[in-house]
Structure formats: structure tokens, C-alpha cells
Image (tube, rainbow, N blue to C red):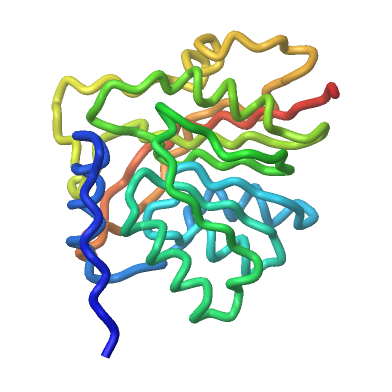
Length: 216
């Protein structure tokens, strides 16, 4: 009989929040986000970085379609479960799962695609700095896809009626990038019918920003 691994204690309030969130989940590796699929399906598989991988739906979809994926999350449980799920699906060699508090550290390497899907948190976070760091981690020709909530779904952890969701234009302005080197290929706010974790449905708005690195 092997000794049970001790439960790892979170280091920060943010890590504790997300660790509790993912420990309470009963299912893992759910559906990939549709805008990630729409974007990546048109690309030749390469290297990808999944910022805030969560339950791993995007990471696993990318790996199953030939991408070498680095999946990062603040939650140790999320990282370990994504790693295990990738092994169970036979794509473990395509996935590197790492725990990062992106307020403090950023994964090494360069990437053809960096995905930040619903990269929101109730804790203070210099998100623009992290996304600027991501643009510098793109290879020439690489893409940064930022998909944010543009509305509050009934199942969202954030039910603040006064929540402000930055528009794609506001996100781009905060990044303050040279448009010659990092042009925006897409900046819009599409609506879609979404299904929540309990099977409930609602029409939601996504705020989408797609940036390409053209320079070296």
C-alpha cells in the first residue's frame, strides 16, 4: 500500500479560491470553447499555450488535433486532473501541464497560439500585463486569442449586476501594442446559445480579440 499524498496547501487567497472551485467539480475535461475551436481548426497544428486551462476542455481538444500544448492554471488540482485526463485519452505526450499563478510567474517558451478563454478572476490581477507578456511569447505569425464574457450567464460565479465587461476595443487599448507588429485580426462581440454545467441554457455574449504577431 502506498502512502497517500498529503493535500497541498494553497499559498494565496486566489489559489485557495480556485483550488476549492476545482476540487468541488465532479466532471473533468468538458467541451472545448467554440471560439477556440473555430480559430484553431483553420490553423496548422503547432505549439499552443492555454492560460487558465481549468477543466482542460481546450487543452484536450488541441492535443487531440495534433497541437503540443502547455496548459497552466493557478489550481494544483486542475493541473493534475488535466495531466491525468490527457494520459487517459492517449495524448499525454502532447500536453505539458504546469501550475502558475500568472500574477507571479509565466511559462517559458514560444508559441504559435496562445489562448486566454474567460480569463477572469474575482481577485486583483494585472491582466493587461499578463496578456502583453503573452504577445511577446508568440512566434512570428502566432496568434493570441482572448475570449471574455460580455454578459453574465445564470451559472456564472460572478453574479454582480454592476460588473463591467471590457469590450475588445478596451482590451486592445489596455494592451497598448504597436499595431504594425501586433495587428488585431478580429475584435467583435458575437452572441451564441450556451449550455451551463447543469444543462441550463442561455444566450450569452462573448467579447473576442484576436491578435497576430507579425514581427520578430
